[in-house]
Length: 460
View 1 (cartoon, rainbow, N blue to C red):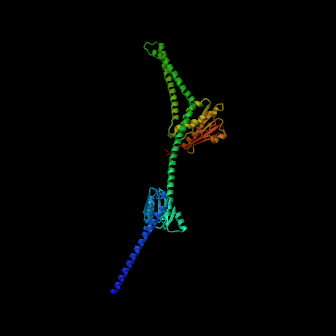
View 2: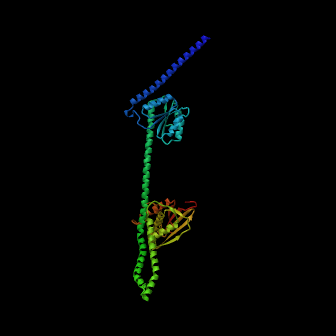
View 3: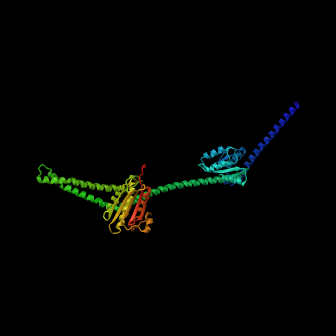
């Protein structure tokens, strides 16, 4: 019995000694393997061009590998080459870190990890890209072309075969760095281009607003002579009435004295009876001047559009008032207004449209050498306000119909038109959600049609 027990103990002792020797040999092999990779990386860096011995890119490298030896070898080699390295022993942890990263990065992912494979991570990153770009490199001992194709089809950008060749690994990572840096340069260029585009758009809007204002001032210049006449008429009879008051003031004062004669009292009473009528005429003249000046000031006002709900008929009347002297001598205005709902408009801009249309109609009729008619109508049709402006002029030449709203195109003689009025009018109507059409009326003359969205129930 004792001999048997001794034999068992001896066998166990021999087994333990053999296991210890085997573990020592395995540890020595790991160390030698690690040192071999480091020597290869050092040798490669010695033979690399001096300017590329160490990485200068700020792009970090994430390494995900559940094998401690492979992960340590990769980390040491890449750190020695100058890369900023972050390691993960878990695919899930690496996946989460990649998604949370705030900068572009290179991800070196082992294909086979127990909790989440490198290919699965590539697939998810490819299908749902994070805010910052990632270059995905799969590490695998698989060498079949079908396996490599599978990895690439599932989002990997490249692959490295095991056992690692450090020179190849560095070259492939460098490709990723260059691609990420190029992409960042493109993004930066796009951002600068976007900012430049915004600046250009802002400048274009400012220039367009200046152009609209310049067209208003140009129209005012055309109407100036007529407006001066419109102001001169009430000013003249105000002046006459003031002169009448001044001349008859002594009569009034003489008749109001206690010692005035009967004749003086009679003359004073007669003039006193005329004073209300004189004052009423002067008040009417002042009101007329005030309307002209107020309308003119409103018309030439510059600044951003201020849409409000207005009655389209009021805007037409205001525009006709501005054009009154231009129209009254040879144009009969015929109005056919329907009961229309309000329209949301910038009053000054819509008046500018109507003034352009009315002055164009006046020019067209005047060109015929005889009196004519300007017919204006409004109606509510299918939720839209439709305004038609029809003149009895010669109409629009067929060759000009398609170019009527082209900037700087005009059918007027040189020096009489800028070619901007209709172009600006069309843009104003479009900015209000409407349309402006030009055509020839079947009965002769030009026909312009404006369609604007009407106010519907519930609209603010």
